[in-house]
Length: 394
Image 1: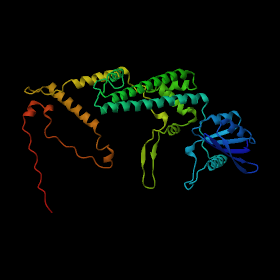
Image 2: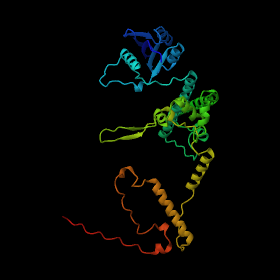
Image 3: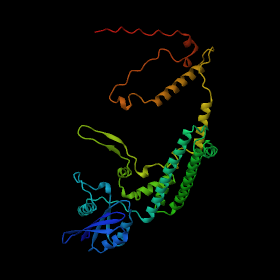
Image 4: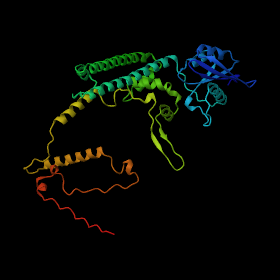
């Protein structure tokens, strides 16, 4: 390993950059204020006595400075801001103190470097993030239009899902009556149509760029997994970058934010939910769901509509004697009702509220439901309720 002659910490901003330089032979520390242009900062670091090692925090200025320093032969470390230790009693924060802290941590190896992507990778990642921004804007625009119609008591009662071709044709025929309200509706519709066009254009561009991108092989492998299509695969590759830098799955999950939170101290242990704030963990809306195709969704909608349209019938016809088929049908109806009831409400033994307590005793029904019993059972008189013991006053 080459011995470093000059250490430098840069506090980079859009308009200015503060550089704190430490000369190893003399031990002198100097601070200089530079312009925010990448060319000027690169020339300043290249003039320092070599070998030089530079560090700055990852931020909104991107990685152009790191790539320019690498091209000039200057070793650069882009530090993760969230892992820089700051004393709790340090209440003063200035550019000079930040640059000094960076150079001190760099000299002792206390910085956690982040991976610097190439220019092609960063460009494709920006395109993927632009598509995600458009998706969020489109969702908000649709919500605004839906709430406008709800305020005017205009409802879409068709069986088809919203935001389909039929729904868009229905929206073009809506007339709110008032001129101002109609102008608002048309403006919202125009914004939604423009966002849909922008989204489709970016999606086509992503599909064209993937075969020639550095992640062509990774995207093809990820698409073999169930539930992952092109957009989800490209989003994962754009945010993760190089998969080989994670030697264990736990490190990859930690990088993506898929780790449970915990705040435990002493005898108290508190475990929270899994954080899902990383952009790569947001499932793409246009990607296919596992095991569900368009034909299956249409078939499920048709069966659901037919179920709602068919009238409910009792398993026993009044005035006719029961038979074996009626008894078996009643048993199947009762089991289906019990299964539906159990799937709707959790079991008392497994619910979080009853953890550590014994489940309540099961109640026996003295008389079944009239729709689930035979004619002989229906003719039997109801059993009288058991008398309760009188309360004793103390």
